[in-house]
Length: 134
Image (tube, rainbow, N blue to C red; front, side, top):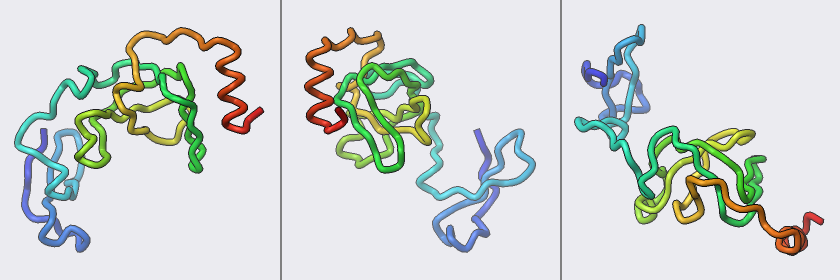
């Protein structure tokens, strides 16, 4: 937990932020008001998922222009609640997958805590044909 020390001196946060001192840091951190809370963050998120919990992606393969990817069965680590639109925030979490440059917001109905079964060869081939990757 941090301690608010006063208004932010950062011109980008003018009237929208505060200086916060976090134990262990040598300097204050400028934070937007929406980034801090008087309440401890929740320990469980949608899908009853927890911080650092291992999950597996079960949705369709996706490849992003950033180079990030989601493939069926890919294991990742839950790092927090979703940061996307508030209408879906209760249905998604952020997951860090190995090899990706950053976390990806995933709907919890496309995640499982247990390793999913391997897809049949004919299903994989049909998906590759549909993706144009064959």
